[in-house]
Image (cartoon, rainbow, N blue to C red; front, side, top):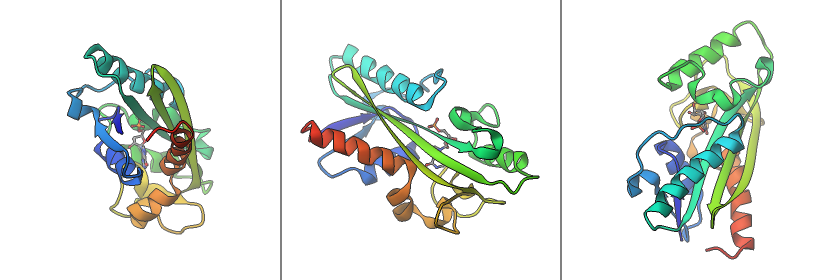
Length: 199
Ligand code: IMP
């Protein structure tokens, strides 16, 4: 079964593709000719995930392609910053979006506090026959005092998941994909697809 992924983020495509059972084939929207940055004007992660999924669903429908479309909107919520950067995680340090600048800004904002608690949240949205279904996952942890590790992307060098001493970027793909916000949301999606006998 084809699942079209409404994102241009190659890291997300890779992570989700590696976690999906083999009966699903994740195809990036780029492979279907949709290359633009989809506007994320929502104020919550589930809203933005639905905006992205619907955008691609409608574009494909206009071409006569009726298919399942999946989108992912994720964010990092830091307790000492009242939940920031949250839904604005991608552009925390401004335009154009840049992971290193975002990480530097986060460290700067937290420079005078030892309160490091945070959580990563992923909202997945599946569009099936024009209806939207939402699946949310989270992982709790803390923010490191400096970037560490080379795996992953985004805020991974700063995020230490609860129960570990290493950042996601040090732990690597195998451990991240077992415990991450994205894998928790994906597990819920899989239960839904199984219950609806979609394979
Ligand atoms: P978006 O979901 O593409 O809008 O991403 C929001 C921001 O969070 C971007 O800066 C991403 O790089 C970052 N991000 C999303 N998922 C992850 C993750 O799994 N690890 C680290 N950073 C992430």
